[in-house]
Length: 500
Image 1 (tube, rainbow, N blue to C red):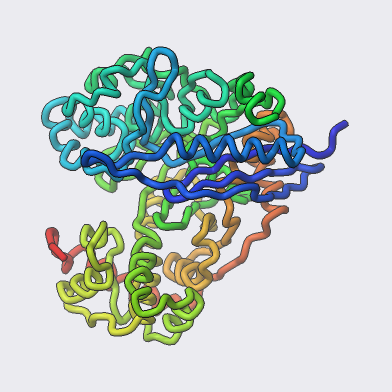
Image 2: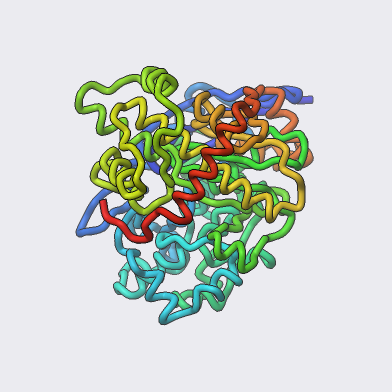
């Protein structure tokens, strides 16, 4: 009986991509990065596109590397960001490079859609998805309004990972977790809603069949086998939305947990056995996205390390300081000198993030941060307090007590922020793994091959392979007082409309 099983994860993010070989050997998991490459936006004719052909070229190169290095992979899985899609012709060819969610063509589209096509509360009742202007529903509506030629010629609409699966196998599917980000999926039936499709001029036949995570789609096409030197390797529709794959890798050993996928953006939520759609969830703009094993990822987007990353870019003009030095300066700075709401519109995409923070502090009658250390501490403390607010809301909805918060993703390395999060939320924090998305991708392939039974057996393997770092709450009185200040600022003192 074969002991070692190898799988290839293609993990594409909004700025870079990579391929990873995962090896499962008698319940032991090992991950090895194979290739890494940039994922660059292309500006043309006033629009912003993804360079899909360049991404495809990098994937082909990775497959050739697998063959050249004689790596015996059993299957391939792909995960990417959500919402974006390609238009495919009747012959399966890509008609045009896909528009990127950062393209401004959807600005104010939601308002027009709600006024002309369907009311907001009905859309949320149908989908349970939070309202963001770049959701696929609004992208398609904007494209119809503009008479987009690719859309008018499209036979099929394929979300990014589904389009790549089509390139690999020739088969078109609609994987559930990534499709759920579109705001066109009914979370109860787990099928595309035909009434919503009609509002953007589409039919059910314009999409492939909806498939669940772990579905075997096909094998590498003959021409790809000849091009790469690989045999007809199986292709699996994993949890194709990157956050769905990341949550699949949460090393929780019970169901009494919340998760925080921490990176440029933070996604905080719970796993639920059913969608949670109510007036309250609509008011708080929570979302219900597809998960593994029939679960719903009930979560909220939070502006995460975006603020810190933007500040570091500004500080780079006088010599970029190492992250470790900024952390040291933050630790030496006074606590709770200034508090901000990281999700305020001021911080969405300002010309200067440091000046936006200064403006917010002036408007809320707080001291303006004077040093890099004070600014860094302000950001981290404020993020932790925002996490506390969202965790309190999650407790309103959760059917289970939430005893632990699992932090996964790149932010799991930030020990200062992890400790602040434990303090603010008064909860035990377990940090890691950092490479959660790729791990979830690999383990869903293993599950498809029958090597693990369910999400809990997956997580048991992950917990053994990637021990977490524990953070216990500290300084509770001080943090509770700071949380009261945070709520006062957010709920009472904060202006409703401001400009930087």
